[in-house]
Amino acid sequence: MKAPRSLPRAPRLATQPAIVTAILATALLFLLLPPVAMAPAQEDMKTLAPEALAPQSRPAARFVHDTHNEKARIDECGTCHHGTTEDGRRDATAATSEGTPCADCHAVHGGGGGGGGGGGKTGKGTPLERAYHRQCMGCHREQGKGPTTCGGCHTKA
Amino acid sequence: MQQLYNFAVGPLAWIAWAVFLGGSAWRLSSMWALARKKDMNAVAYMDVRFAARSMARWATPFATLGWRANPAVTVATFAFHTALGLLLLFAPGHAVLWDYAFGVNVWSLPEGIADTLTVLVILLCGFFAWRRLQLPTVRFVTRPMDWLVLALVAVPCITAFLAKQQIGDNLLLSTLHVLSGEATLMALPFTRLSHAIFSPFTRAYMGSEFGGVRHCPDW
Image (cartoon, rainbow over all chains, first blue to last red; front, top):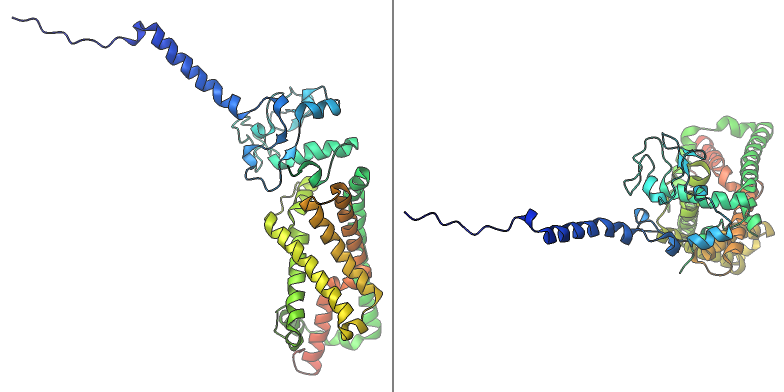
């Protein structure tokens, strides 16, 4: 009696460390790539044009992050990237939101959580456009420096 | 200049609104007192039904003989006041200021439509100016005050258009826009622009007299 012919086995994944490493590396690359592509580094920032506010009705507000802060002598990230209380209200004493774009917390129509899915906070939440206007114009008026007219920031390219 | 702009959209805006509202209240109450003192007959004949009929008919283009007499002026008048009213209440830039100052989300016109209406109002100001210069009957009744009120409407619109299109010195034009707009607001109760607050009463008076005394509509 002939012994049953054993079918050639597919190589087991666990036994192929090179393949596993390649898959994991690719996955890791895909995990890392989108944030890199979507959120340019602050030093490359030239305008404030969050996708959440598209299509924009006026030209994007001109804002060169590092040049602005150098000129305005802003050293503390928390001056703009402010912290919030538990219910999402602005709080100067809370931990700053350093490194978080405005649109990640401020939803277009207000309320908790932003377009980027970050935050997830409860409370009223300032709508994104109002947050930008109050942050920029508010400070410019308070300091008596910097543009406060529409065309002062929303300049045509 | 930046400081002047900040002052114009800040404290001066409160002053302008206070002068407008206080001035309007004073003008209406003093006119009411004058009517009671000198023309009590007219006050006695005031009738809501006739007043409403007059307002409705005169608010409809070509509904009255007066509106049919000069079609070009009728079209221009209705287009002018409609466009101006829409821009005052719903210009995108105005909505941003309401939103910024009070957190009130006001509906606003699409940018393209607001731009078109601004150009329309400027052109119609030109049409009214042309009439005052060229038509003898209109020239005869034109006083310096008429040129002042025409300028009080034209200047805010022209500066708004230039600032929006970013033609010329943006800060200067934005400042002139806000200052001239506030001048118009403050002048409204005290110039011929006061027709904005008096016109309902003018219509109520005319409608009541024609309806209650002459027993006919005010043509």
